[in-house]
Image (cartoon, rainbow over all chains, first blue to last red):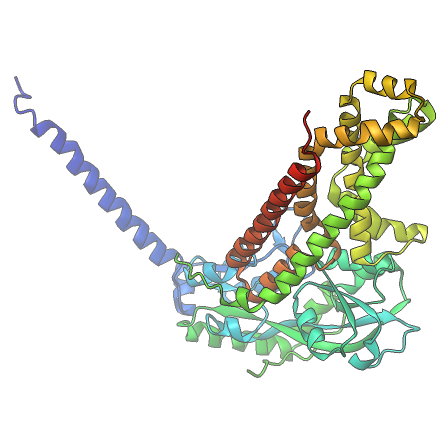
Amino acid sequence: MTFTTSERFPRIPSSRWFAALACASAAIIMLAASVACAQTPAEIKARGKLVVGVMVDVPPYAILNEDNKPDGYDADIAKLLAKRMGVPLDMVVVTGPNRIPYLLTGKVDMLVAVLGIIPERSKLVLFSEPYSGFSQFVWAPKSAKVTGPADLKGMTIGVPRANTADISLSKIVPPGTNILRFDDDASVRQALAAGQVDVVTASTTSIPAMERLTGKGKYERKFDLNTQVEGVAVRPSATELLAWVNEAISAWKADRTIEKINDKWVGAPLPDLKMPTQ
Amino acid sequence: MTYAVDFTPVFAAFGALLTGLWLSIRLAALAAAIGGAVALLLAAGKLSGKRTLRAPVDAYVELIRNTPLLVQVFFVFFGLPALGMRLRPDTAALVALTLNAAAYMTEIMRAGIESVSRTQVEAGLALGLHRLQVFRLIVLVPALRAVFPALTSQFNVLLLGTSVVSAISADELTHVGEYIVSLTYRSFEVYVTIGAMYFVASWAFALLFGVFERRLFAYPA
């Protein structure tokens, strides 16, 4: 009857299938291009939303609030950026290891993700002027006479393994200093509370948690190790967007908006927010 | 995504890794030796037939065998200072590993002792030997021979288990490896290397114990 030629029957659906696949891929490519790869403030405004990558696991800079929405220092900055641009904000949750790939593959327009400005990262992304920062320092009992690295000889120091404080400290302590390296900040706090270490490295943000374990007023900041500053990151090609972000941050530094956000979330004095020299 | 494998930073730190392995081996060997001796005493106590000896040994063995090694390590390092006992990381690691090994080896030793026929003990007693002489001259060697493979595999568990004490900053192989990972981000290369080092060490000990077994217990069954 109608289906006399046996080879004709399978060919029709397969060509339809290919057509559908082609349409779908084209749609996906166009969608991706229009949604994520906005490079300039004008393109973002035309699209009608600002897509920002934020973290949620670095308190007090990046947390989840009671409604399970990203919140904290960084979220406040992201909200201000969207407001200044006059578009709604879309916050995408990123993690330490995936944040730079999210930016580089165009899933977000920019990162406000506790991203410390360091040379290794500056090779991959463009950093804005710093908008936040914290210092790391040596934290020891008030009674201990520690004014510089030389005084740490013979003491036992707890540090989180190979974090920036460990690296800074290891370079400057005299031989014979016993540095114990733990997996994380929590173990370092435990070791201090248990008296297993005399001295620890701490940062402006870790003091409240430390004092919950050891009590207030028994320890003090002895000498500083380093200051880390964080910047907004954009793709290397997005120079126009970077200029726009820098202008916003400069304005917020001038009118003390940044300082107010720091007071609200960190509660410790803001270090000098200047671009590190590389 | 392509990943360029690069072992150079790992080989640059190979000396540190060997030092770490040496601490792992020393921890395991000491914990096995002390733990084994303690276990023999505990097993003998457990089989003495006296309730006052058996109950505390049972309680100890069950407590250790039903809690994770990591928790025991944390208890010794972070918990004991509250009772006024402050141990350095490697000492704390040795104490925790010994306590752990002794509990498992107690049960192995018990099985070994029970494997020796009751009639041999009775024969010894009938010859006028003291109970301790019976244990030393008649029971001990056949008991150890019966469970020697189990003891050696317990040693290997212990050797690999030393990796857990990196959590209290003892500088054994895993701790050194993790430090290199933190500095170089070469996690794949580092973990492959320390995995191979554990494998070689563990395997070498298994061979060595095989030689021991043939030398020490080479008598007809």
